Image: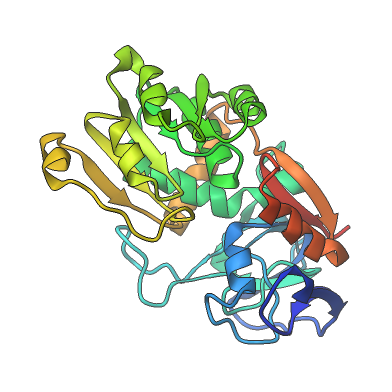
Length: 326
């Protein structure tokens, strides 16, 4: 089969398509003939060696395709060995594509419990784009953030996978969504997905501008922060609001004023990828609510994986970047 193999860590050019051996059958696992795979920023970190993946390695957490044993059209849950509790993953948890070969290939093998029926009405590209950001954002907004219909949500960033998924999910359940972005065009695109409005985070007073767009200018019920801008995020919360954090692309450390935090009665909630139970609940929600599919920013073939990574790292796209295998 063809796969994108990484034989050393480094920049995008370490990703090269080549012929490799097909996965051998094994009990409790299923092989999926992939039709599309989706890129995530996590893939860039793996490519750079941040997770110490064994070499040679095949990246990729997200994918959609056909089970080779049954012919069923499926999507792949990249959350492996979550464990028995729902509060946090267990000690054996890992993400597909971290240590085990992932979805930048024509075939991938995963535990049987990590496939689910492909949602009706989604293209292969849209289905492949769903799992990681879908289950991550669902867990962040609903089980962890407890966002409800009629509440208000501020999403930091508007162009990446988590941000676009958050706009689609939150507006789909009836929340009012505002975004931040570096681009007026991305704010316009976020509004097409269901956002009510947006502000430019390149402006120094963006927290004040965002708060002015909240109901009664009192602040937001929930702020979703995938970048690590906690100080600005807290300024946008209403008293008693919830700050949900799932990333740190802009900062590795923050300084908070404890008195302002506890007098504001705020909640600080950390979250990462969701569980199989979260994924099943996400798929049910897609069946019962009007949630817009994730936008596809660009598609590349397997042998264009390096170019796909460069496009992702440039940060100019809106939505997901996808590799197509057929």
